[in-house]
Length: 170
Length: 416
Image (cartoon, rainbow over all chains, first blue to last red; front, side, top):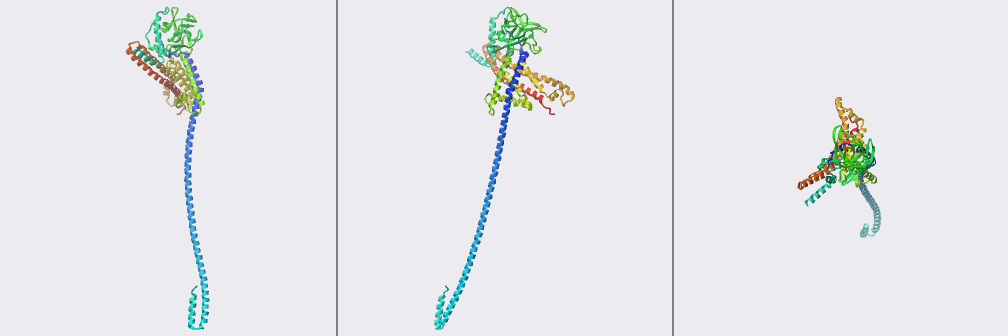
């Protein structure tokens, strides 16, 4: 069987030209419009979603970092505050202690002073009393001496001696 | 034993090839013809030619009015128009194409006959109308034309040879086509392929689009993620870089081009499925390039036309050279688009047929040399098959990226 070698594919025939136009245009207008467009829209939306999510995550991370920094600041501040408070408290206690000490000292001094004064007073009173007693005793003695004198010398001497022993300062 | 192993290996490798089984049928047919047709109804002897891989390849890549899948010949609707007779619409099964063959019909319908799988028309007006039994075994006769003698196919009826002519072609006679007495608007093998590819793609993309709607905000799944990879590749590597902020407007067009071409390319690669050669037919690529041409030039802005007809910033005498060059370039671009895709796919299909054909050419020789050659050519055929899968993607991609660059050039704003 002989083929008449016919390279027919290089010759465009009207039927195929017509049908290709029909099917390509159908492809373009039907699949292009009702399948490709929605797919592109969906892809675009998803791309946007992903971008948004990434941005969101970035923002969240930034916020977290900010928050952490703020926390640290707060902590540092609190620490500072604490040390300040401690310092003030210490100062206050020191002051109170010091004050108390001075006060106590003053009080003690006052007490001592008043005690001294009292002692002085008592001493004075005692002295006055003593003086009075001595005076009375002296008067007594003198009276007795005067009385004895009248009876003898030795007797007088013994009397004085006994009187003096009697005195015995308290 | 060796014979069995040889047959087994051959069959194994042949199973990778779309054309192999079809061709086995051919060889079988040949033997039958030799045995039974010494005299073709008084029309003389039909010469039994040697196996001609070139002619076989031409036959396999050609569009057909029947669809051969393996040993089966499926009839397709014929829609024929003859300026004198009007429209004829019937199934190509009416031609009674021979099984296992290349589609030579044994019945003529209203002067139309099926030769080599393509509808032809009997030139002689006296040929009877209606369904007529004919002898159709690859006869040919020479007819006189204004360019001298021409060898054309013929059929035998009532002991007489009737030369037939092919359908009209839009090549203006440059490649031996030209306008004949009828036009063929049939659903041919290529048109049927386009229908199937269109349906498959529609199903695929509508289900993917539905998935996007149903699984809003969820990660892609299944076929959706497979398509998405290709889709985003075209979107981000082709549309966006070339079209700038216009990308969304032209994306459906670019996607349609890419997936239409890719679908047709891949469909032609399916083994045992007829090996249809739609994107390897210049009519298909011509239409695609023409639509691209229209889209590009309709969207051309002032800047684009200025660059073609009055290139700014060059001396006047350079403009006299540039303008014709740029103007020619307008038309050369779609022509190169047409030829690149057509030539690549056609070449791929032809190489496949020829490598498989080598097995049959050497199969007749001695056992030892033919075994090696057969395995060699089978391996080559498998290798080519892999290359062709790659080419299917590359050519769809190249067509799309060039279209994108042309549209990009036409819509670019002036930035001088």
